[in-house]
Length: 354
Image (cartoon, rainbow, N blue to C red; front, side, top):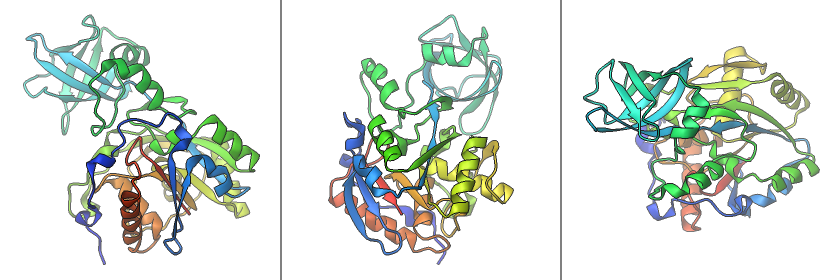
């Protein structure tokens, strides 16, 4: 059976969306799904060290979310909302603009939070994207810190700008290190220093890679044929130390446990591109959907994802590598989560799929 985008719809109560994180990150619920037979157990994330095996290698994405959202205005007073996507070169950004339909190349839009600095439109791209120049030039990190806000997903509602300081802290993993993401690798939001210490005590190894989560993470698949979906590319790096740790785990027969779909995409991209795990960096537009064989990852920690999303498709593929029965398994698990009042999406609860 060939799966289509509409197969990845599911009935959902919007009241299950988690608009706020839990005060204690590791108090999140953890659904444990055995993909060999579909059995489900209900645990708490703080129990993770007892649920993994000594010798397992946990792979974390250490990207750091930047305050990528900002408000701009035209000389006429018209408002334009912006989202930083990446710095193409020094002083040149790729951004997403909403409300810029009447703007023309050469026009400068000023930041509401600092009108002395603006973005000069160089050329439009596809789907509201623009190449812009910062005028006058300013370091990207310092400027976004001053004028930007946390790029929370569109389904999380915020009316109070006073929440920004908390959002910058909460919408970030405790091990975030390398700035560049416009969305958090949300499976990692449940980790605490206590859980990481417990994993070390249990003999579970950890290593880190980087994938700067981009705009496409929340984009629904609009084509009915999965193969026709244009996947957004995201920058990644698998450093020497991480590549050595993953290769050693594979060689020794120890499990590689990916934290989040972002870690999966890096590991599987490197294996597909180079035929083996090795240090690598670059851009990946790898789209994993059923049926597909996973070359590296043995277990996955993930959140509950939106209908029709590439993330849900990846998880369905992981539940049945090489086949198409994983979709039924994951949708049954989601229905169970709904019945058990799990919290969904970025600030929601987690799954451990083994």
